[in-house]
Length: 336
Image 1 (cartoon, helix red, strand yellow):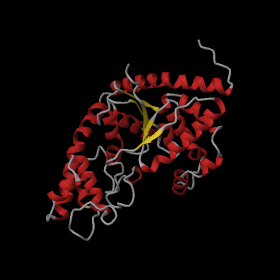
Image 2 (tube, rainbow, N blue to C red):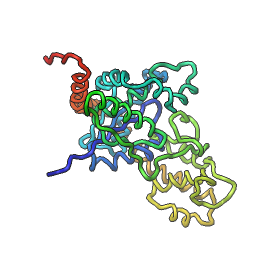
Image 3 (tube, rainbow, N blue to C red):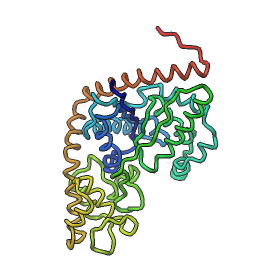
Image 4 (cartoon, rainbow, N blue to C red):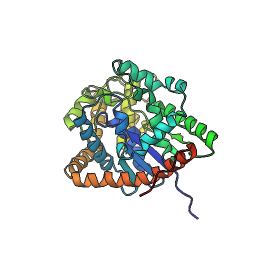
C-alpha cells in the first residue's frame, strides 16, 4: 500500500515583481518538490492589500506571477496553482481562527512591527491580523510542510499555536504544520546591502534583480555589487558578506560548489568574478523571461490554469471548512 504524500502549501504576494531571491529562495525549491509531495502554490493577493496597491498593477502582477510560476517549472498538472482571492474559504476560515488567536500573540509578531514602521500612515487591522489569514491559508489544506525562509518561521509557529488551541478545544481538526527550510540558497541578499535580504521593496535600484529584468540591467547591477577591500573570492558570510552572497548566487546558477568557485577565481580579482556571476544569472533567467512572455500572450490559457486551480483548491478547502463550522456550532448551510 502506497504511503500518502505529505502536503505542502506556500505562496508569494504579488506586491512587487518576483526577484532572483524569490526564485532561488522559494520557487526553484518548489519545483524540486513537486514530484514527491502533494503541493499547493498560491498567489496570495489578499495579503498584498494590507499595503495600498494600484488595482491595475495588482491585477497585472498577479497574472505575471502565475505565468512566472509556470515558466520557472511548476507544472499545473502536478501542483494546484491558484489565486488566493478565488477561494473564499481563506477569508471564511480566517475569521473563525481570529476568534482563537490572542491579541498578545499578534502584537508580538515581528512583521507587524516592521510593517508598522514602514507604513506609519496606514497601520490597519489587516496588517495586524495578517498572521491569522496566513494560518488559514496553511491549515485550510491540512498542510504538513510550509517552505519558508528563516525570517518566516514565526508565521508557521503561530499557525501551529492556533491549530493546537483549536484542536484542544474541539478535538483534532487541523494538521500541525512544520516549517520546511531548504539547505541552500534560502536567503539571497541585496547586491548593494548584503546585510539585508533582496526584496521586492528594493525594486528600481541595482540591489535587486527581477525575473523579467533585461540582460543589460542585470550585468550593470552585478558590476556595481558591493564586495570588500580584499581581492580574494572566499566564502565567509561574517567577514565577506558581499562576496559570499555573490558566491551563493553563482553556486545556485551554475551548480558549482563554493570550493570550486574559490578555485575558479583564485588570483583573478572581483572584476572577473562579478562579470561571471552576472552572465550566469542572465542565462539562468533568460528561458524564464522568454517563457513568461509567451504565456502572457495567451491569456485564455492562463485563465484556464487559475480557474482549474481554484476549483481543485476549493474542493479541498471546503472539507476543512465544513468540519470547522460543524465543530464551532454553525448550522450547516443548505446544499442546492
